[in-house]
Length: 197
Image (tube, rainbow, N blue to C red; front, side, top):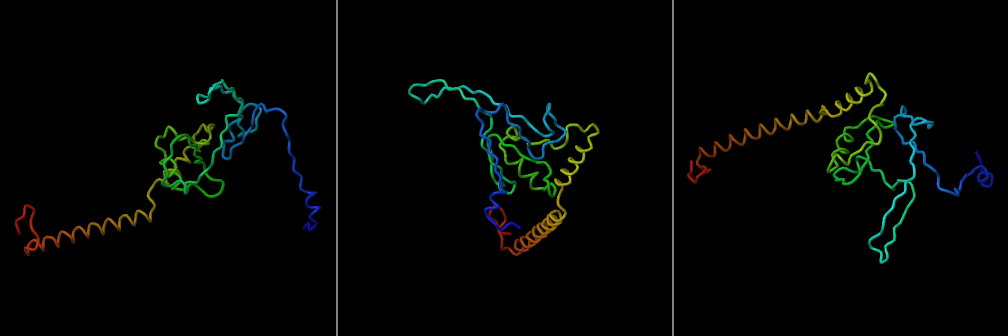
């Protein structure tokens, strides 16, 4: 263990490269991307983001001049969990990551909550495929669909509670009908139309 702070500072090396010119491209590697996807000489799972040029003229200026911008088509964004977005409604472009998490497994809430937050599924995009593109026998596709179907099924505890509540509702309806009939026979409840029974 190092106790000397000067020695510790000497061990920490930070390398910063200041670019004189903008890069020709940015290479990114999203977590969970199918590693069977290869583009040219890139490593598996890497994607190239190339710069673009956009031209526009601001209409609010007193002397509008055309503006030409050169840059990468990347925008600031944020991530939110399925727990955080419950009850929310999304408009605009959203990307969901429904791939199996690195630890644990798929969760029922993710499969329901995320796709149902959108006003239109045209705005719902997946960050990565749910199964590899190169799976000629469709083994991975079948496994993923089987897991999704299992999660979409009724939870045994919830099914048992539903049955219990349904039975209680039937008993309550029957008891209500019995009590109402007894009151009607005793003349304590008026029949529809105003006449006493």
